[in-house]
Length: 122
Image (tube, rainbow, N blue to C red):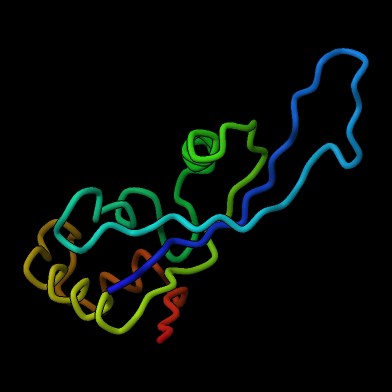
């Protein structure tokens, strides 16, 4: 059972006076391992995403700066990359906790937070 949140992150380098870099900013794909449904920070998607986008750009930049230890200029959510087993477990956990999402159905919850950005891979 595996899943990861995938983000595109643009970050810059802070240099000492007299030191230049070219380019000054870089794009990277960042994969954040998703906690198992019902464990740890499994509600990360609820707190960070909305309709397949980061719901608070500043908060997302702060998180990415923690992950990467560099100044982050922008963050965009790309996908939840998951296997079928993880997605089934996530759906079951959501079904048991619909009140946490102000939703009446699992599919409604998934669309509300991920949009169409869930990609199941073997």
